[in-house]
Image 1 (cartoon, one colour):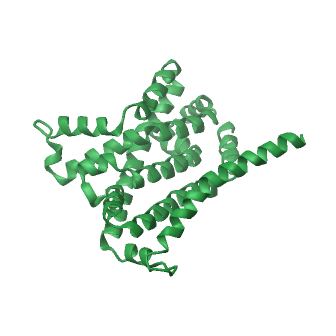
Image 2 (image 1 turned 135 degrees about the vertical axis):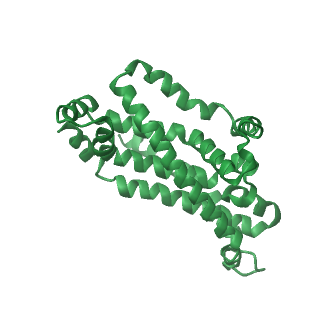
Image 3 (image 1 turned 180 degrees about the vertical axis):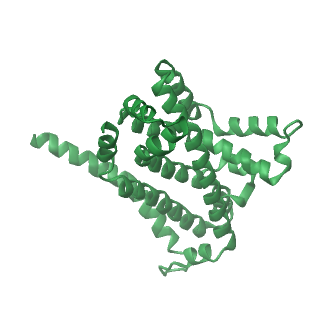
Length: 265
C-alpha cells in the first residue's frame, strides 16, 4: 500500500508540474512588459482595448444561443430514443462522436460552400452568418451535450416517470418541460458550461465566418502582433475556462443523487 501510495503521489506531482510550469512561465512573461519591472501593464492594455470586450460579449451571445439550440435539439431526441427506440442509441452515440473525427475546417468550408449561394445564401446577411456560426458550434458541442444528457437520463427511470405522467393526463410537452428538464438540470448545467468554454476559445469556424468579431480570432490576431498582451490573453482565457469548470462543480455538487432520487419517486 505504501509503495502504491508513493507512485500515485509521484505521478500526481509530475502531472501537476507538467501542467503548472508552462502556465507559470506564461504568467511570469506576461508581467514583464516593463523592462526589469513586474507589472500588470499588459493586462491593463488588454482590458482597455474595446475590441476585447466586444469580442467577449459577442462570443457570450453566440454561446447562449448555441446552448439553447443544443438543449432543444438533444434533450427530446435522447429522451425519445431511450424511451421508444433504444436500439438506435448506438447509432446516435456514433454520430455524436463525429465532431472529434471530422476537422472543424472541413465543417466550415462545407457550410460556406452550401450556404453561400442560392437558394440558401445565408452568408449574405448578418443574421444568416450568425445562424451558421451557431449551427457549427452546435455540432462541435454535440459530444459534450449528448454525453451529459445521456448520463442524466440514465440516472432516472424515464419509462416510469413518463407512464406516471401520462396516467395523470400529461401530454408530451408537459412531460418534457415539467418532468424531464427539471430532472436533467445538473446534466444541462454541465453541458451548458462545457459548451460555453468551447465557444469562447474556438478559432477555426469563427475566423472564416465572422473574423475578429469573435474572441478566438481576436486572440490569434493579438498573438501575431503583440507579444506580452498575447500571453495575458492566454492567462485570461485559461481563467475563463477554469471558472466555467469550477461553476460546474459548484452547481452540481450534491445534486446528482437528489436528481436520481427524484426520478425514482
